[in-house]
Length: 76
Image (tube, rainbow, N blue to C red; front, side, top):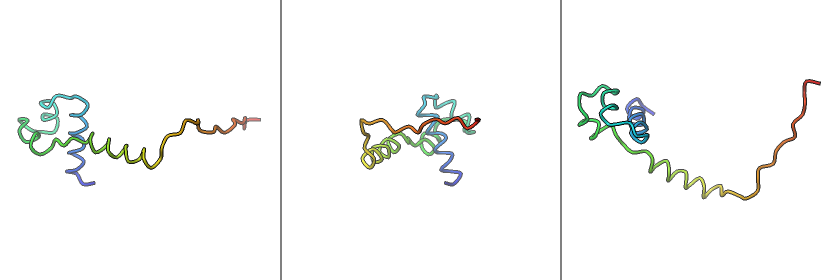
């Protein structure tokens, strides 16, 4: 990941979490929201959701709980 991709991810996460675009613009050093709206803001939620869906298909959930290892007291 290069610095520009990291910047896009940072802006996208803040935007996706509901931070106002004006605050994000100031945080990343823009005087207005125009550049950010055109270049920086890329929505990552659809990609994350499609990735999660693919993982769910590869590893389907089961109704059985995971086996737990017994707890041993190693202090004795």
